[in-house]
Image (cartoon, rainbow, N blue to C red; front, side):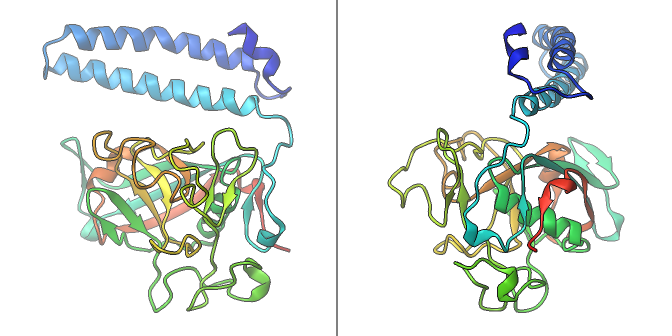
Amino acid sequence: AKSLIPLCRPDDNISCADIIASMNDKIAPLTTALKVSLDSFQGSEQERTALDQAYEAQKQLAIDLTKLEQQMVPQGYKIPVPAEYNNLPQLEGGRATVEMIIQKPNNAPFDVNGVNIKEAKMIMVIDGYNSPVTGGNFVDLVNKGFYNGMAIQRSDGFVVQTGDPDGPAEGYTGASSSSSSSSSLGVGPNGERLIPLEITIKGDTEPLYETTIEDEGRGGEATVLPFSSYGAMGWARDEYDPNSGSSQFFWLLFDSDLTPAGKNVLDGRYPCFGYVVEGADFLSDIKEGDIITSAKVTKGLDLLKLPK
């Protein structure tokens, strides 16, 4: 662990040594909880309690690991973005956090593992390091209040999707002029702001734009942001047009048997731009017609670069 400390950038508010110490403190409770769960009768209350404790310890370790990774990113580091996307919002040099609250019609509760909860609250981390255009577009729309009051429009056991506004347009039209759109993509048939397909492949120094990894002859290569977890966030588009995305996005209901990471129909074909880090369990009971009552950027808004 000490060998990691020299890799961290200076920060007056937090140090890698403190983060590593915090992670070490959490490993023992995680190990203990896992051992108790293995030693308990399957299906017993003791096993359930131990697994809940293990899950919480794992979540806290993941939060610390994210902090540690961020401290290893050089100060001021930004992914280069082609000039033709200068008229699109971009999330530069970091990650943003978004909080979203969803309610059912008539205030019916969400059923999460047999527990009724009044509203679904999810915390999402949006990655501007590897998905600056897609992430910037999402953060911009959240900050504009675009998703507030919008219904969930798809929930089929594979994904939960939203982002299609009322009316003929299938995406965001609030910036439909040529000065607010990509010079290479223009706008959609109903004035939608379009964003390019954006995929970062492991080992590359910048994202691949406007094409899938298969079309580039690189099918099977791993992406930096894979669809590998329950609640992975992807940008929706027309199946046959990689650059038709606008405002619709989805959460993947990841199943390792049905959608194995790196071997599914999403990686390298659709951009993954973030992950649900808290509240992903709610996705199992979020249905069509449920309403996003609030979506707000709680961290990283200062990283959003808007077109001039």
